[in-house]
Amino acid sequence: MKVLSKGCIYGLRALLYIVSEKPAGEYVNIREISEELDISFHYLTKTFQTLTHKGILRSYRGPNGGVALARPPEEFSLADIVLTLEGEDFFNKCLLGLAGCGQAAPCPVHDFWIGHKAELRTEFERTSLADMGKRINREKLRLGPV
Amino acid sequence: MKVLSKGCIYGLRALLYIVSEKPAGEYVNIREISEELDISFHYLTKTFQTLTHKGILRSYRGPNGGVALARPPEEFSLADIVLTLEGEDFFNKCLLGLAGCGQAAPCPVHDFWIGHKAELRTEFERTSLADMGKRINREKLRLGPV
DNA sequence: AAGATTTCATACTATTTTATCTTAAAATTG
DNA sequence: CAATTTTAAGATAAAATAGTATGAAATCTT
Image (spheres, rainbow over the protein chains, first blue to last red):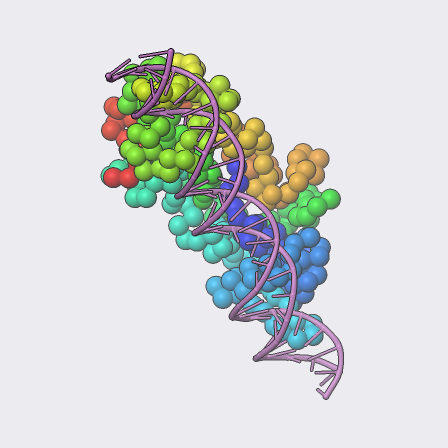
C-alpha cells in the first residue's frame, strides 16, 4: 500500500526534521538534512525547489544559507504539503484509475472509496507541522533509518 | 492517491467483469475481456497467469477456452485479490516508507496509519467478488471507459 | 489421424515513468 | 576574490508498463 511518491515522502520527512530539530525560522542546510535522513541530496533539492516555489519554504543561498519554513509551522497542515507535492487532485482519484469516475458514472468501489479519501483528508488537514513536531519530540519518533 | 498498481487494477476489473457479466464457471476469453475493458491484452494475460498460479483462476486452452474463477465468487474477497497481486505485505507498509517501522520504532504517522490500513483491510475482507458482481448489475456500475 | 485453428503461456524487447546523479550557474559571505 | 550554498538543466539508471514473437495445449475439420 504505497500511497505517497518518494518525492513527497522525502519532503514530508525533511519538513518534519526541520520543525522537530530546529528553532522556527532558522535556515537549515539541505545537505545536513539529506545526510541525517539518508536521502539523495539532489533529489531532495528538487523537492525543496517545488516547496519554495509554492511558498511553503523560503531559501537563502551562500554560507549559512539553507531553507526555512515560509510561515510558522502552525499554519501548514500535512494536507498542504501532500497536495503541493502530489498534485491538487490527490484526494480525488478513482481507486480503479477510471477517468471521469464520479456520481454520474461510478466505478464499483466509488462510494466506499469516497468515504475513505474524505476521512484521510480530514485527518491530514487537521494535523499541522507544529503538532507533528511536538509529537515527534515528546514521543521520540523517528524520521529516518535507525 | 494512487494505491493500487496497474496490474492489480486490471486484475480486479477483469474479475469483476467475469462475475458480473458471465455465468459462474464459464470460461471467458481473455481477448474479449481486454477489449471490453480497454486493457492491454498481454499485460492482462500476465496478471491472469499470476491469478491462475495462485489458485484464484483456472484456465483452459483451445477453442472456447479462457479463464474462469477457480471457486465460487462468494469465496473470494477483494482482499484475496489485492494481496495476491500486490504482495502479502500490502497492508503492512509504512506511509513514509521507513524500513522496520513498528511499535518499537514508530514513524510520526505510524499509529494513525495503522488504523487506516486496518479499516481498509476489514472492508476489503468482508466484500466478496459475488457481492460486487451483484452490486455492479443492480446499480449499473461501470468497469471501463464510458 | 493429420493438420489447421484457437487460445493461454512465456520469453524477450521497447517504451514510459520515476528516481538519481552530474555538472555548472547564480547568490551570498567574508 | 575564494569559499559556500541554493538553483537548475541535463544525463543516467531503475522500475513499471506495454508490445512482439513464439511456444504449447486443446479442439475442430476433413
